[in-house]
Image (cartoon, rainbow, N blue to C red):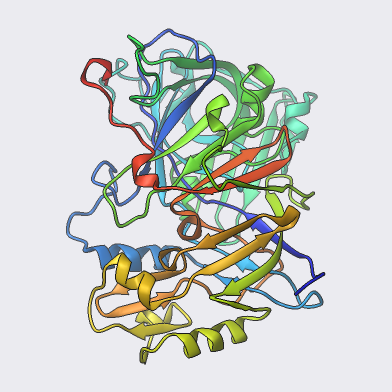
Length: 438
C-alpha cells in the first residue's frame, strides 16, 4: 500500500456525565469531566438484568452501521464505525441552573436541548435536582435569543429567519427524524471532576456566559439526539470546544480516555492544558480538511493484520481465517460479518492470545496498534466476532471500541490528533474524602 492515501474520520458518538456543584474557583489550566457508559451502574439507563454479553449485543443493535473496510482508491476509503450514544452527560445550564441529560458527539457541532416556555415550572434547588429532560427558558434570567444577522446563525446549517428576525433551524436525520428549534444563548457551568484538582478546598469551576445552543421546540422520531440533549464537540466554529477557546485562554483542545465496557470504571475527558497527551509512546497525526466542518479527518495510510498488510475487506477475512484456528459460527441475529466458536466465555488475555492485533498507519508516520479487544467482541457466550464490516459510503469512522484504552487528544489550535495507549480504567481518579462534593 506504499504511496496510497486513505481518508479516515475520527468520529466518536459518545455521551458524557458531568456533575456540577456551586464552587466559585476559576479553572486556570483546564478541567476534567467524567464519562459514564450508558450500561454503568451509575447510569440511569443501567439494566441490572442484562449480562455482559447482553450489553454487548444491545450495543451492536444500537449501532446501525458499525464497519471497517479498506478499498482501493477508485472505490473508496477505510471505514471504522462503533456504537454511538454509548455515554451520558449531565450538564447544568441557566440561572438558576437546570440539570440536563445530554449526548456528546465529536461528529456534531451544535449543543441542543429540548425547551419549553413556562410549562415545566422552576428548576429545583442546586444539588437536589432530579434530572430534567426539558429546559424551561422562562425560568432562567440569563436566557437569550440569537438574531438572524449574527455570524453564529450562519454557522449552523438549516437555519432561517422567523417573523421577528430570530434565528431558527430545521434538521432532518437519516432515520427520518426531524427537529425544529430556535438558536439561543445561555450560561453553562462546568465543574472539575472529583480528584481533578489535588489539594483544592473546592473543585474549580468554569462558567461560560452567552454560549450558543439550540432550543428544540418540536421533535419527531426516535433519534437519540432528539430524545436527550446533545453537546457537540465537533470541529465547527459553534461547537463547545471552539466556544470555550473563543471565551477563555484554555485553547481549543480536549482529550479523553475510554475505559473498556467490560470493566466497572468511569472514563474521563480533559479540556485546556490538561488535554495534552504526553504519555510514553504518544504519536501525532495532522488533521486534514474535511467536507463536513464538524468532522475531525486524518489520513489512514496502511492497515496490518498481524504481520500482513491488507488492502481489502475480503483479504482481511482471509488472513483472519488463516491465523485463527477456530471454527466459524453464525453471527447472533446476523448483525456481524465474521464470528468464531470459542466454546465459552473467554478472558481478555485469552482473547489476545487467540486473535491478532490490528495496526493502523496514519499521515505523518503515526502508527497505533489495536489489541484484539479493540477489534473483536463477545456478543454471546461462546462467540467472538469481528467488530468490523464492509463500508457502505466513502468515509471511515474509528469509533468507541477501537479507541478503548487509548488517550485520544484533539487539538484544533495545532491542527493535530494524538494517540497514546493507556489503562483507561485508571484515568478517572477517585475523589479524596475531603474533596468530595455532591
